[in-house]
Length: 117
Length: 114
Image (cartoon, rainbow over all chains, first blue to last red; front, side, top):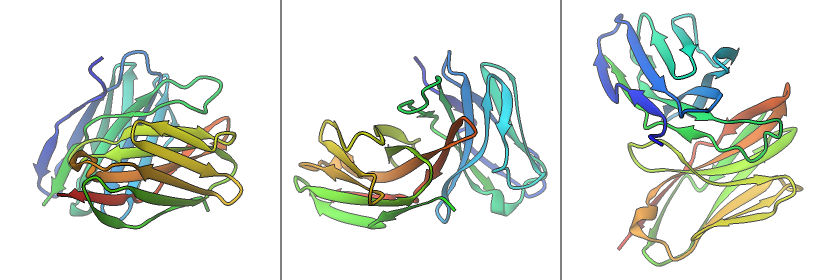
C-alpha cells in the first residue's frame, strides 16, 4: 500500500493567497484526519471525517479554514485568505476504526510544509 | 482539560546507551495510549498502542510501559542507534461520544550521537 499521500509537500505563498492542501487516504480506511503541527503547540487535530462526513471540526482555528471530503479517496484542506501565522506542517492521517476503537493505528502522511510570507 | 506532558523536552545520548522517555497525562475517560516516532521532515509513525489493561508492550528495541493508576507512561529505548534520533510523541485517547479524542504531547526530541 502506498500509505497516506499528501500534496504539495512544500508550499510557500504570500499572505492573502488561497492555499489548498490535498490528501489521499489509505484505501479502505473510513476515517480521515487533518492535523497541524507547530513547534509551539505540537500536533493539533483540526477536523476529522468518518465515511466522508465531517464529524468534529472544533479544532479548525477560524472561518478561513475549510475542509472537504467529496469521496472516500480524496480530501482537501483550504485556507483562504492565508496569513503568516498559518505557517506550519499540515498532516493528513487515516485509520480504520471498528466498534472497538482501542488498538486502531492511525497512519500519517508525510505532511505539507506551508510557509506564508 | 485533557493534557499530556512529556519529559525531557530534549535528550542527547551516546550510541549504544539506553534511555527512557516519560509521559504524564490527565485524560479522562482513558481509552488508550500510543507512542509515535517522528523523524525530521516526516510524518509520525506508530510504535506502540496500549489499552487500560496493558502495562507493557514492546516493539523491537522499544518498550512502552503504562501505569493507569498514576497516569504515567514511559518509552524505553535499548541499545540506541543513530537512527533512533527523532521526536517521540505520546498520544492519549479519551472516549468521547462513542469515538476517540486524541490529545498529543509536544514530544521529546532525542539525538543519538557517536
